[in-house]
Length: 268
Figure (cartoon, rainbow, N blue to C red):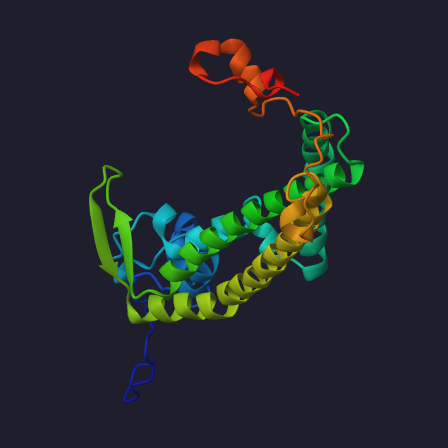
């Protein structure tokens, strides 16, 4: 080294950094926590209707939530018929009524009638009426189920049983839950109830017409004088109907009950 010149700067390696560098491309969370349920969006859980958000503090059991009751009802038999296509809905009702009338109503009407000489037309009409009545009962059951779920969706409160031992509690819905339930009830449940109402009116009218026709067919035997105004002439030639009161039969069983003589004992 020449005198008068400064010594060149010497570079020494620095001490190791005790804090490790964090790469911006690596996830600091452990691998088994990257797909935890907390990362699932809240809208997805609402769409599924399986869980309530933790911040609402909903104490209602999952099976008693109105949205879960709606999903259970929409997939159960026969309530799911009402939410399907109108053609499929009507075809299922017709098939149910025809099956009941053919396999249950017709055998009962054919072999269970008292009169042997009954009209086959009246028997067939009785079987059809039984099928219509069975479908009416099924539709009434569907209407009651959907009306119950619709009322719980549109209501601002939820009545539930906390432990299942008839300890009824009431939970007030939050604004978000109430908006979701009322939207579902207004645009999904109300059209189903309207369809069921029209179905009940049509079935009631069909059942009324079938009963009127059946009464008119059997009117000649049961209610003929009332509908036609024609009464049989009492010319003495009519035969005695079994089970109807007559003086001769009563006199033969209890002769002491009659003080006078009968018509046969009068002088000619």
